[in-house]
Figure 1 (tube, rainbow, N blue to C red):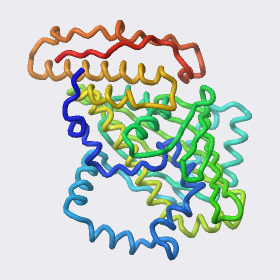
Figure 2: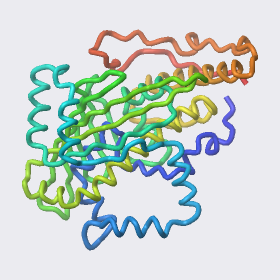
Figure 3: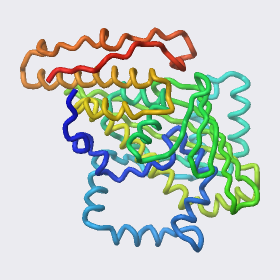
Length: 360
């Protein structure tokens, strides 16, 4: 397949993506373990203030302003993030604790009771096909591998069993992510993080519970839009660290909300790339590392499906027949037979990879 204008195809290189941290289900890990580092990076004399942020926005260049405007078009904020007591009480009522096993429920409740930090992330909306959204939600290690291939992150994530991942940010933060419950509509994850640095006497640890809710809607033209929102509770074993976390929470909350928006932008960009420039996706997939070989095959199969569906919608919109699209996806990428595993995909499904072909 010919790759044409890879950068222009997706716009990823032109957008202000700063995913040097984690995907949405991992946001709690680095924020919990490395919140103080983010604050220090912004202001060497202490945690930055809202005045610093507002001043930075006033001084932005025309190109940065154009990027921000384009960003806001692609990822729409329907409701801003908050940390109020009312939102915390509401978040507790939304937790799918009744769907968990007894041992999982005990762990989740322990975090909820001891959490000193809470954040309801903004309610966001972005154009993304449900198949693309679910692929990255259920295979987050694939997203992290793509970030490394695009050279926008050095984050490492490796799957240790069907519901667990080890993570390493490359800056001293390590952790573990465990999926307690996951459907297409919601996901509940426990994250543990540990930050080590020669400048601090003792490692900083934290445990978080992250709840993500997603709604997908199909438009009349066949395209889809996702609306999602996350809520996180973080517990620190040290009272001193907990106190510092509360002090700088106005700034760490800004970082959390921004990361959530940037992950949403990534999902949108990948969905658009699969539909409009599958050659770019194939090119970037060859650079993926740190994941099972089957991840690339799954990604290419999904890309072929999204490209064909988009092509058919375009032809249907102009009244043309879609019979000219001749892509045998099942032959190119055999479907993976998945054993029952509590709704989770297997760690290493076996398929045979073949060159990707699409209609011109």
